[in-house]
Image 1 (cartoon, rainbow, N blue to C red):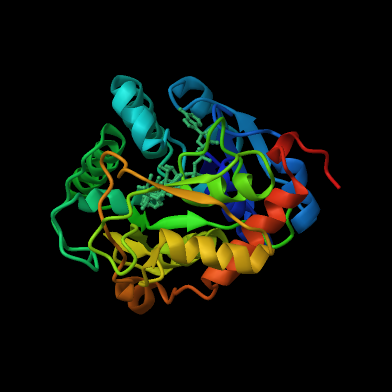
Image 2 (cartoon, protein in one colour):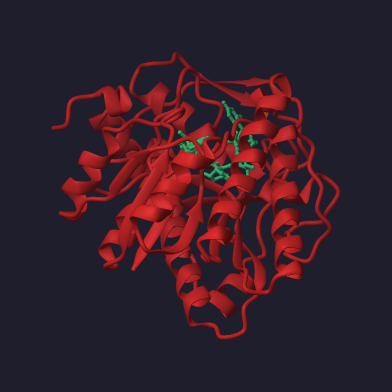
Length: 342
Ligand SMILES: NC(=O)c1ccc[n+]([C@@H]2O[C@H](COP(=O)([O-])OP(=O)(O)OC[C@H]3O[C@@H](n4cnc5c(N)ncnc54)[C@H](O)[C@@H]3O)[C@@H](O)[C@H]2O)c1
Ligand SMILES: O=c1ccn([C@@H]2O[C@H](COP(=O)(O)OP(=O)(O)O[C@H]3O[C@H](CO)[C@@H](O)[C@H](O)[C@H]3O)[C@@H](O)[C@H]2O)c(=O)[nH]1
């Protein structure tokens, strides 16, 4: 069975490709490589002994995308491709709307033309905005505080409207909490461009000596240690959630659109993560407590019961595993994919 993975050379996409290949799926990847490296495919092959069919395609180029659908008998799509930096999205919002919304509309159009209706979409906990109580439950009202987040809210609405108009659409919307870690092989992982925006890659770059110290954004939140609390999820657990979602789409006779939180259902503070990382890596992480980062909220985590009851999915890896694997990746690849394969 051919599965098309958009954005399959990125952080979460590459880990999902590994799990798809391990389960025997044939994998076709389209990615424009705007935030990833083609080097990842060699590493995926080292891990799985199998290769993906890669096409360097921008979703904004509908004709190129259509040619991929003509080449393979695609049965389902996992749609990761998109721009994802919250801060950057406030600087160049129109690029975010153009890339994420137009890219998705092109994909949906080409899928429908080829009568492919099974879709797993990468959404985010950011769609719960800032006014919902925690833990977040899937039926809560949606809204977001950044242009990036609004692209996710809007795409979720596109998908609901598409299903309402034509119930051949069969869609699983996965709302990720905070994906971190790396494949335990240390061959693939997160390779951000420039200064990392996110906590774990910043910590690993401090540990490997690329950054002097961590800035902890906010020490005065109403949380036990004053730092922000998030629901961190190992990227391999997250990748496996996509397999469960695909299996459900393929097995159900009644087509549907459903949203699922993919999180652990547990919150850890920034300082919890720092301590867990220090223990797992045996490295000291110097840090300064700084003012809060604009747009951050004190605390959120998932209610992950729906994913367990309907997809049969739950996390199996701990914060310790996330830190160990993130460190294994970073220490073996100090320059990410630009590092020589050991
Ligand atoms: N990493 C997170 O913290 C997080 C959290 C919630 C949701 N998500 C979502 O999950 C998805 C994957 O995230 P990731 O962390 O793997 O990001 P990533 O940047 O590593 O991967 C996204 C991939 O999409 C590609 N891409 C972007 N625009 C494209 C276009 N127009 N055409 C073709 N390819 C394009 C990029 O080159 C990249 O390889 C994204 O949709 C992101 O918004 C990520
Ligand atoms: O250098 C840093 C980076 C982060 N933080 C803190 O660490 C926590 C986690 O931050 P980060 O890793 O940036 O994740 P979030 O801000 O929670 O956002 C991520 O997780 C969301 C939920 O999935 C996604 O929507 C976003 O795209 C993704 O960036 C927050 O309390 C931050 O203030 C620091 O203290 N220092």
